[in-house]
Image (tube, rainbow, N blue to C red):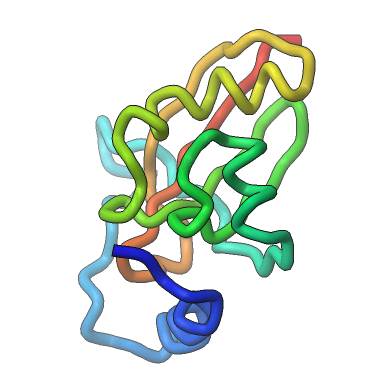
Length: 123
């Protein structure tokens, strides 16, 4: 399953308007990871996303952050599981750093079907 860029934009625009989406776990709940920031607009191509993360580019909606902490917003259904697992180390290596930690959570705007991979790289 993959989404064309127009489908992602439609999802980004429609998501805040849809009251039918069940809320994701909140960061304040014990044991639940903190939510990532809302999915940002990212005009880069699918090829760039795949080059940076190793995740099939059609499954990545955006990448934000910096060498200390980055966020990879991806379609959990379309993304290949092994690529998602390898993405944090690949992203940090691109910054010339080692992987410190990573976890998967949801974006704060609860875009349907999108998860956020939070990546912390070592100093």
